[in-house]
Length: 249
Image (cartoon, rainbow, N blue to C red; front, side, top):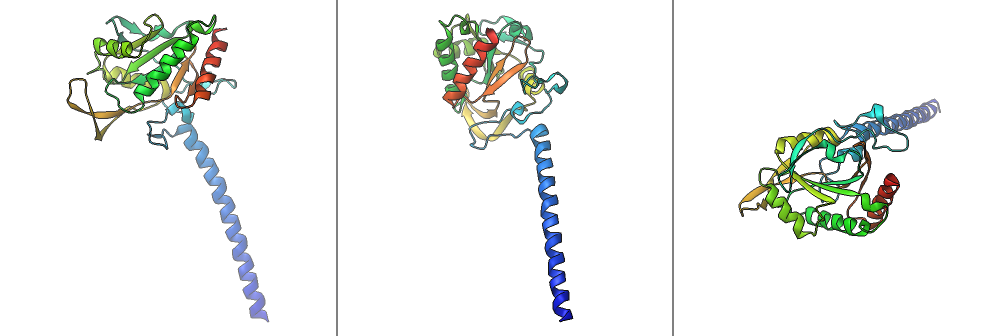
């Protein structure tokens, strides 16, 4: 009888310890998840369509959390200083965003993945807001992550092929290092070349694919992010236009 009671007591103690261990582990996992959510910068999205933006994770080198806002979780991200060339070879810097509401994307002309579709969505945004008394003030900027190949003439041709209105939609290019730092300092994302994925460069040669942010970034007149939106989701594109209209209003 005593042996039976002792066995039952041992089992009960084991179960209590097991449940306690699970509770502690769960709590630790939740805490770790929050840390990863704020600090981690996943390289690619789960669907493999492209990189996940660092700002989506809520942290990164570009985050200035002291200037964040409860109404805008992305307010801690701000477009960093830079100097590049536009499609006409004119030198531009970060002040291109000052005082304007802008949709910003990153691309390269040899991209065979999301870039063509992103450009089509940008054209759609341009056309849908063209005659809007408020949203027509929305500007669009696309920055190449392959400045060594994407010269001003190349990006001008790219823009023309998508019907870009040069008075509203500008394309920028320049030193790959400048763009790399711009992306890193602005949204905490590290541009990365894929040695095992080759695409055809403008001159016909093979080049490494470049992982870059693939979401639409809405930038406010103070260069702070208003939001990020999936180009693959029409509802989010609608929301981008609504948010832009509100910011412009």
